[in-house]
Image 1 (spheres, rainbow, N blue to C red):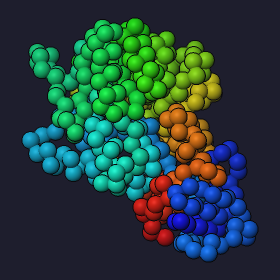
Image 2: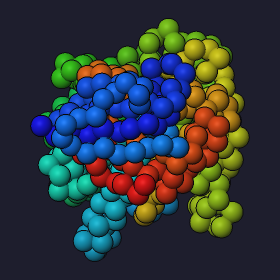
Image 3: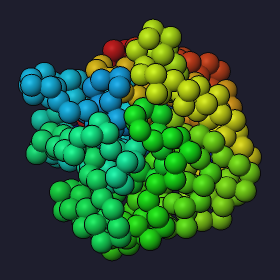
Image 4: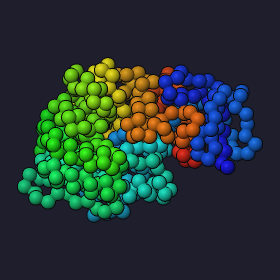
Length: 412
């Protein structure tokens, strides 16, 4: 039996309880077996003891919107690798492994990464977080996933085992076939592009993409496979279309009205705001690195998204947490929680990246909280994230990372 005692930390268990000082957690064979006061835990006869005095112990963080394969700032879910596939793959692996080192133990890829990377990580070939892949996003012609020039008839092609480029589909039956194909290739959920986007060259942000019938075809196929659909939606009309189709996860939700926020609650859906990517893109715009066609759209979303998060929170929307950051060496992922905390407070920001995301992933019986019987996905922080949420923005403050009971980082 592999036994590990995490001793004498302040515990944020993410069950909704207050922080618990001087608390210890006993892990056996990758499962949390006991949570008790440091005085009452009892030391195991065998195994390791890690003293966490002065540190905060909490569940591993999760990110519901990653694009590990988007290694360029102008990427849209996934950019076509250049001629050097080796460099591209190394950059992707670096992004995956860096996420785990910063305390993210489970992530949902929101399109662009071939599910083979998830399998390689599960097998231990890549030392990264648990990855829930979406495969190729589905986009209508002229939609957010259509990266062609106006007169180019050839879309970006996927690279089997590496890149899952957007699939252009029109009509319910084409959508149905594409959804089935992504599920066949190993997608944990199906991604659809339901509105215009900031970085896409030819569509307006207000563009409503895919009909309800088209998205219903994807939802039906996903549900028949025991899975669900997530939809890229910036505006209220696109959100309402997606909800009418049965979409479970609304991505971004940047420009919401009150009625739409209420409708998300009524449909039992989740919303995953992505504040960090807008901060990153705003800095890139200042440096002249953002195309002209994106700059006005970026200003609009950058201004409105925090307002929409506040509106959604007050309406009772289940808010998950996603970063959507792009580029090579995707660091500082925890800054998403700092930005969200400015709107909903530090505890709710932490819960969005632990308990709520776990519910969204349908993994709430495995991850997202520290309690007996859960998988031992745990991190220890130098500092108090409730008193200073910004400590999570710097991965160096994450001193201990455990996924499935295995220690992947220890700098205590």
